[in-house]
Amino acid sequence: DTAVSQTPKYLVTQMGNDKSIKCEQNLGHDTMYWYKQDSKKFLKIMFSYNNKELIINETVPNRFSPKSPDKAHLNLHINSLELGDSAVYFCASSQTGTGRGETQYFGPGTRLLVL
Amino acid sequence: KQEVTQIPAALSVPEGENLVLNCSFTDSAIYNLQWFRQDPGKGLTSLLLIQSSQREQTSGRLNASLDKSSGRSTLYIAASQPGDSATYLCAGEDFNKFYFGSGTKLNVKP
Image 1 (spheres, rainbow over the protein chains, first blue to last red):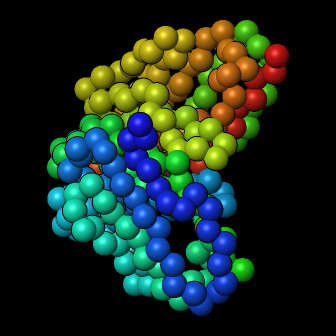
Image 2: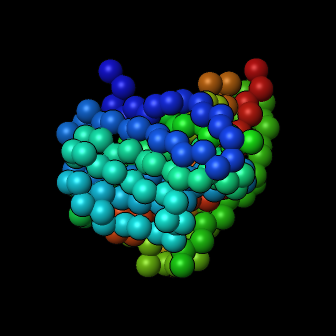
């Protein structure tokens, strides 16, 4: 069984559209994350939620809005998509997210292409 | 702000060679360092986690070291195999925020 799953795997859309990416983890973890991997392969954290509460919010345009209906799900909604949003988005989870030194488990990524 | 650099960006070796991947970070206040493997079209798999108080970790043919004072970590792969071909990412962690390098793309030729 996949521990951290994301849908869709691929997403091709037009500029200006609104789209959502879903993430689910079945590990019973308390904390979930969204990362963006750009064309240069750098992964940067965008958000993290602990038990449905936002705890990390990096400098991300407010067109990106994470939503956590429960601690097993963290969805990412993007409004008014721009060309620069094209990237691979990874979801991850960790046991508590409140300590240090925890392993994070990553999903397979969602490849977003904005035309 | 933590910056993580990985050298080389790409590496191609014949099967059976031992190799070293390098990772450097700018802020020695890093709490721990993880090495990940990324396969094309797939997510990241954690390989080794070195906590702040540790200097190295070993798993099978992999050995990772951490020298906080010099801001360096290395991943040593012994007797490389074609199945080791992937991109290897190091990430420094502080309070659950990971700072990733851009990775080293490894190709092990049969």
